[in-house]
Length: 317
Image (tube, rainbow, N blue to C red; front, side, top):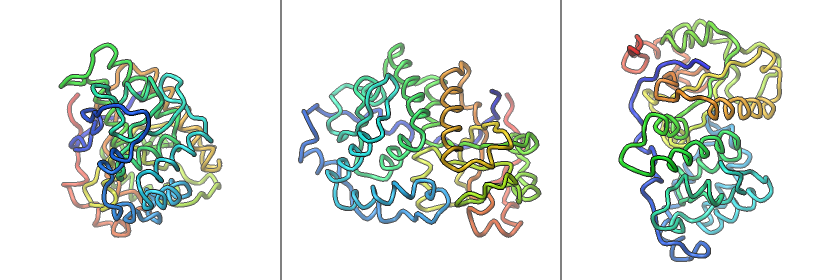
């Protein structure tokens, strides 16, 4: 699949787990839980009415209450869901969640997940959103993990990840899935034609929350990057995602949301597994607060006049 070019800074939270390692223990110890526990108030800051969080609200509200009750309770809730779902990681291991301090010394984050199924998880929003995506898009997460682990097997963990691992990390941390049935809108995104994408085609965007099922929409977005969700706790106009473009049939917009998610999970995971040319150019920049229905100020067309956010032009290939 051909993707658009990317612009914008790499998120500061990229590969946040990669340098974290601690001595292994048989299970999450009370000491490790205490060391990695963060102030509880951060979890209370999630506004599930926001469209970017709403896709996770059903499970997320329950996890939020567990996280507010403490680190041990939170991990218990995640692992109960993992056992019930039966999801697998990149090399077919049963998904589970461990305290970050129980990652064995010297083990890589992605390699440990692939080899054992255990996802090192801290008591913070970054890892909270990461865990949610293992349930929202389990096949995509497994595909990302498999490719990351394979690259680590070959190159090890060093100061440079290389283009492929950088692209995988960008996807995991800052991607949105841009599902589109109209090539003209895909071209508008790739061509930085924000007024066509967000104003002329305003009525062609799927409703921000819920599902219409009438087939009138032509495009929609799912937030995938967990660092992106963390940033959207406090939204700001220049918040820009790396959009992975998914061509969908027009009938997609008549399907229930769960069926759409399953389609995206299967389609994108297959693309990630098969693509040999992954790089930062595999994405198109998308200022997320420009999405119709996502941010009240964008109801005024002058919102899109800010050229520092809605930039023109394309980076040379």
